[in-house]
Length: 337
Image (cartoon, rainbow, N blue to C red):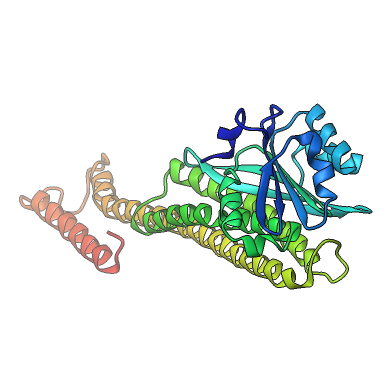
């Protein structure tokens, strides 16, 4: 069930952008809570508050800021969206930005997820196209032992979910690249295929600009001096980074394949133009023979070879045809015709 379905149901639905507000104790769900209670719950030992927001307004973000004493600059970034993946450290909290990617009507669309992480709380803020994190929440709640590891496990679960959703996008793009590659080898690339090549390369570049900075975020989460990250969780962020690195390698491979396909299409077009030029040149050479002979005998000279001979017309015609046939045979043999 999508988190948006909970928008107006239960205690958590207290704001237009508030999707869920839940408190956990040692990995076990305690209750859906009101946003005004979130700060107090987060201060209790072994308790973690997980709040989910979807495109919240400024007033709702301000209420969240007050509850957890979040830095105003981070709140400002979360309100604006259109941020690049990054990790910012404040005195008692982290601010993480990750970009989501999914296909909408066959086109690549990007969204954003902002994470506020502090002692006893995680606030996830979604903007734009992205899959709901209700699946992440349900899967985490089903693994109480892992969820008991606290806010760093929630951060890992969300980032892992975001990165896993890059795979179907790349699968779809890879299928389109394979189709284009086959089409390039079979026939001439038209305007539609060229536009598709450009669109796919642009989408891959945009996706690469999402994947690469997120690797740096995960690398920093592995650091020993990062706050709120238990040493036992660092290998999990390393695993996410490995997935991102493989995604980057796949993106680069697809971009190179598209570049080769475009070059192959250009070479194919040049070869076709060369073949056409050869055919035109060959026919021009063949037609030059009767044209030249007809031009000579079309002159108004009284004394010309075989002009008065009874069989002169047939001999000239036979010579013309013979030369044309020989030229045609030679051009055909050499591959020009």
